Length: 210
Image (cartoon, rainbow, N blue to C red):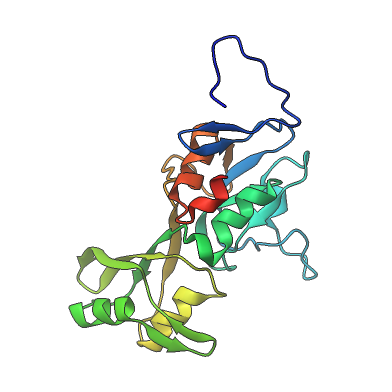
C-alpha cells in the first residue's frame, strides 16, 4: 500500500517502509553509539569488579552491548534494546562490516597484507580480512586498516599473532556506514533514524527488510 498525504497509521500494527527499509516506529527502542575505552569490559556485570559498558550509557531504558570489543581494545560499539537491529549487526549472514585501525610497532610489508587478506588458520577455523590496507607507516610503526564481517573472540589479535606481528593499539573506527570521529573514549550519543536505516541497507540479505 502506498501512503498518501494525510494518511494515518496505527504504529502498533503498521509496517512503514522508506526506500525498501522498514522504519522503526516503537518509541521505546533506543540505540547508543559508544566509544568504549581500553580497560572497560563488554559485559553488563563483571565478577572481577572491572568497569563495564553498562556504565557508559543511561540506565533507562536498559540496553545491551551489540557484539564485543576485548578489554584492551577501544572504539565504536552499539548498545541497544532493539533485538532486530542487534541481530542484523552481529549475525554473519548479514555481513555488516566492522573497520579497525591496528597500530603495530614494526614495519608491515606487502606479504603481511596479502596474508591477512588471504586468511590464516586459527584454532576455531580460518579467518581473513575482507579488506586490508596500510594507512601510514613511519620508521618502525605502522597503522593497518582491516575490515571484517564477523566478530569472533579476539579475532584480529589472533590473526596478527599468527603472522608474528605484535599489536600496540586496536581501535574500531566504523560499524558498517557508521563513523563518528568526534566521540572521545567513554562518550556516547544516540543513533538517529537515518543511521539506523543505513545499517539495514548495508546488510547484504534483503529478506530482513520485509
